[in-house]
Image (tube, rainbow, N blue to C red; front, side):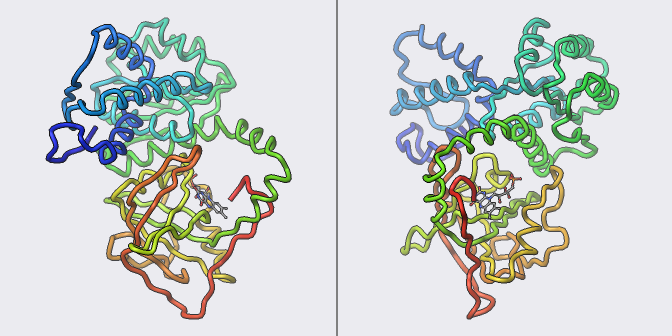
Length: 391
Ligand SMILES: Cc1cc2nc3c(=O)[nH]c(=O)nc-3n(C[C@H](O)[C@H](O)[C@H](O)COP(=O)(O)O)c2cc1C
């Protein structure tokens, strides 16, 4: 994990858990099958007393719990019914990092990802994975890499029209152009899940965010039908009863470096007085999730009754990955750097303190450092719902 403290060992499980999980999700999850194999081999070594990672604390006190986590997460991941195959060339340009960002985005939708290096994998292995995957993502290899090109040709022989595709450049300087390959997939009747990612400048955090959002778009496309079926199967009385839980309407806005994000939210509830704090439930596949990790700062904007339709519309609009969510919106900058919506009734400057995994959402607990109300007698917009299986 990318965790640094004065402790040499994993003494404080609670402190390291979020980073342990985050690292797994970003880097290990997409390789769950290899991980399960590696753990099997580790098992053959007999009793393991310490795992000394290259970075992060040495795993000693909680070795069993931490190993069980890796085992459980990987088994779940490997069993995911819907899989996306991600082909890239490791060690070339920015390929690996971009591939990981896309994989992370896909996984937010609970779709599994398996990553394969086009240069070192066997053709049969590539074809087997491409044949069973619901979606295929390819990072363009360098023009001169004959092995990678042979691998891509072998892929074209096994893909099916009901699969979806996503293509990205790796910014390696001599990437094979995207268009000829893209055309071949489209001619085979394969749908493009996100516009091909063409990278013209050295990738930044914003590029990685764009890649993550593109991955989430692809995952959402694959799970949409499954989710609709699940929602329909919920008991009608139960869903109507749950629909009587009402909340206000808010917009979360955040800026971290050159990456910004926003989300309309209604599952917000005050949770503590000392310090002042509240929770917000954030669906696991939300783009804003990466800006709401422990320690992140953001602004909670409260929408006003009778004066929120414009903002609501603006923040629900479907945008292409990487597009500016704040275009045409009046904002000011909060002390913590996030945008305040000038037309909101009130705002609060907040910090994420912890989050609990609640099935398909993260319940994020935040404390409030500062805030203002723009109209003393304004009232909060309230969301009244008919059913409880939507916001
Ligand atoms: C009235 C309303 C309230 C919402 N509340 C929440 C919420 O509390 N938590 C959440 O994760 N999504 C909520 N959503 C969904 C997101 O606002 C919306 O789908 C999201 O901004 C799209 O972002 P994405 O690109 O990350 O999918 C709500 C949507 C609506 C219409």
